[in-house]
Length: 419
Image 1 (spheres, rainbow, N blue to C red):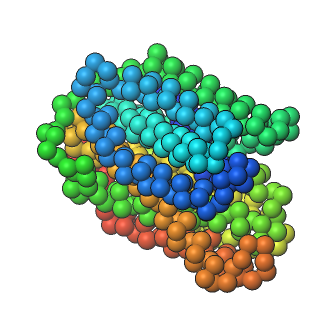
Image 2 (cartoon, rainbow, N blue to C red):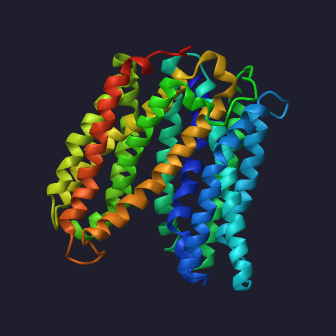
């Protein structure tokens, strides 16, 4: 692939990342408060739709693997799913006036459509990146392009609604935001369709294979375990970050800038991690990134009110390690898929997608009740030490466990196209 091909491939990562944050952050408030659905009912619909979203991933992976052997192909699958996602996303954020019962159905149906279309694109897109090149180093560059644009999408999702709110109010703001998202999604899908070569077809394994067959391949099972642990560490910190900034640091006004600094540092670090992976290998690069993350982030347990500059340094340093977490695991996954399983690559990355979603649910399900049980209440003065230890201490311990297992399993993960 040329440099232009890699950029054309990576561009789709921006709207895919941009779609996730508004659904998690803004729809509870929109439907629960502004649209009058109520927080309890809104939360139940979000939970049920997320269960559907998670359980359907292996089936979507099988669908993508099946379609690669037909004229329909991955390009058309992404094109159709992108159109469905654009329409569903606009509908989700712009419901017409209707009764509460009809709004409940509208919310549930549009959520499931958004999740399904997004997952169909994402799983196919991940598999495409794994099959785009036979060279391990080039695959790392392809993954880095995708994750770099993904960080741009997260930043856009964080800042664009706030910026649009300066000029537009109420429904007009969300209409403008959803149209901007749809435009970027369709543009990036068209760029992928027109300018990125589709991977050559590979013979599929027999269809009697189970949906969880990838986990029977020991190197992939080990990598999936590491991906879960490492992702859990990151997700716990992300879940608690706003509480920590608000109550431990008393810097709520700076929360957006601090989070942006973290993600920008991660994006800028990606070229460095690419060079390191070529020089020392992906596994060692990931180990080094984990070490830097722990050494930088553990100091957050010691900060207190007003510590803006020390925390900014922590954001920049730990953000620089984020590049390793983004680029290395998926690139290693592409390396260790057995040659005879290359026709089922989407099936492997459907498990990858399922784990990523499970990590988010685990982080919220574990950390939020635990901090409440330890006496912390948002906006209060109690339980701040427990919050700081959960926010920074627990992720560092999980990171160390993940790094220890990575060190132990490193030889099996360094073999490309293991039999």
